[in-house]
Length: 145
Image 1 (cartoon, one colour):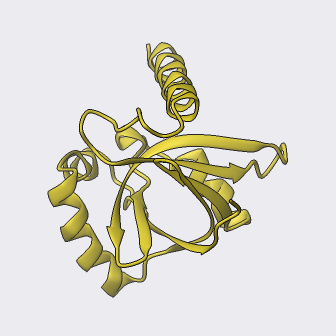
Image 2 (tube, helix red, strand yellow; image 1 turned 90 degrees about the horizontal axis):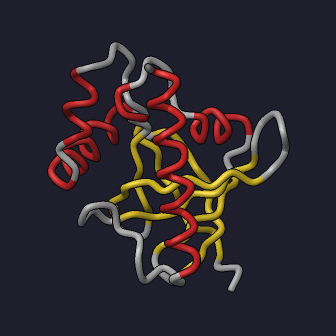
């Protein structure tokens, strides 16, 4: 059953990504939540991998949480960023090159409070898993457009 769930979710995320890109970022917020597209380089394949993620802003930075629906393991996008922190983010119609980093312990507490107000599901996911959900900061370095 878990494998079927994973395949269905993967198909939904793939469709979400296509709609987001085809609409030039006009359509794509996830059930009313702010959503960006994160593109990273696969650590094994070397190929670009794109994932829609709920985010929030912290000044000029974008913050995402590696919840992966309370899975036991960190999401693949975060594993990829740990090997290569360079990424591309699409926020609506804007595209940025960015660098990813894990929030420090002090920063994590502050960002977690903000994030769980925006997306209360993150708190529920944290309760359902033993791992600490990574709070990842994406800092734009330049716009490729």
